[in-house]
Image (spheres, rainbow, N blue to C red):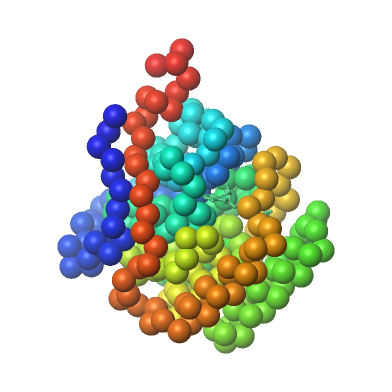
Length: 276
Ligand SMILES: Nc1nc2c(ncn2[C@@H]2O[C@H](COP(=O)(O)OP(=O)(O)OP(=O)(O)O)[C@@H](O)[C@H]2O)c(=O)[nH]1
Ligand SMILES: [Mg+2]
């Protein structure tokens, strides 16, 4: 087995930034928890060529799945799979995936959910404002188009949390909880997520408070048909205190509270035994 590559998020030092202008990779980061039924569809829809980038790589963060998420992800074409035997939380997984993208030299990264609700085929549109130098952080907004099939309480929750972020940041926002976002390299280096549980609101507060430029683009969205949502009644109880903590902590140059450990899996263990 490969040497584990866990990571101390505080080790990233801009002064020793190994990035080279010729690397030009866009890393597509996919956090996954029991998504064997849908992750292959997402991976197959990721465009493997992108205007403005020399290559596109796919990095899956498997967070203690008990199904075949890892095997399915490798078989579908994931370039990197990092995995934890236990569930560390969506916020921890996303933070690890984005910091790992930075460590691997990515010029930019996209994060997209593994549940096939978001249009991976729209990644070229999502990264366009970054390639053009018009934005540092791009959100794919579901609500700039018509969303069908979303339950009323989810719609209301999305509206309330989006309104709150817009007020706090004094900017226009239509979808603060989207699972499809793009990041410029500097944002990957500087962002923090204050809790392991979730990232949606605190990530945007953290990035925009560091004066990075946010833009939204309209995306298509399909409510999930497989797997299970991680959102339940505890969401509000965990998210509100994290928003308060984020707002009362300096956003830049801080020591991350969330320590993650995901080990890189060698490619061959992802395949069914008869294939390799
Ligand atoms: N790494 C990791 N990923 C998770 C965890 N929980 C959920 N995910 C992934 O995060 C993404 C979003 O999770 P969902 O449960 O669909 O949450 P959501 O999209 O906000 O909610 P829905 O609207 O119900 O789909 C999916 O790709 C999940 O596989 C977790 O604990 N760890
Ligand atoms: Mg989802």
